Image 1: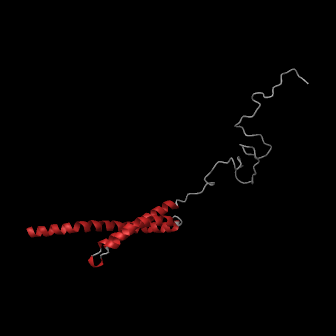
Image 2: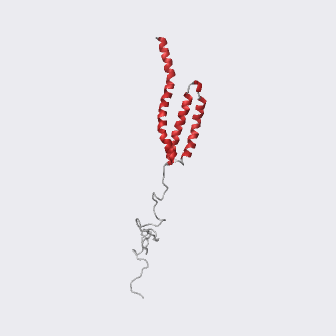
Image 3: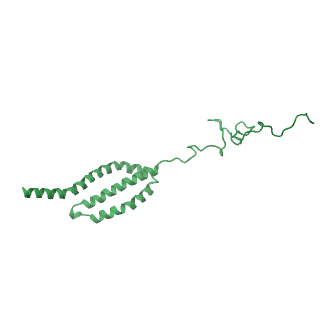
Length: 167
């Protein structure tokens, strides 16, 4: 039966825009695809299904930073080993462990890599080592002064002897 008006299959403005959410008969539906969502009665009402939900910090793995702790702890251990090696090399003659100190200094790089890998799984141990790092930092400063004095001392003694002989 004709009304005398032209019939159009698609009238502009009647079709939904691609960005519009599909019409839904559900109380809670995904704003993107229209899939029914279930609301447990607590908190905010759901707006998107799991597929269209944005990634949030609670959905992603939390970074605890233990890798950084492991790196710092391994650096403290490296410094401690260097102090021990330096002390071995500076010991007086009857106990001089120059070769042992040099071997320890050479092995230190490989040790640090292995120690860091091992410490990645234990943040508690890393924190314990870092607490001790304050003490090793003080020892490092004392050792640095000791090395400096040990380097300068022979020159100073020779200079003093020379000055005495001239006087």
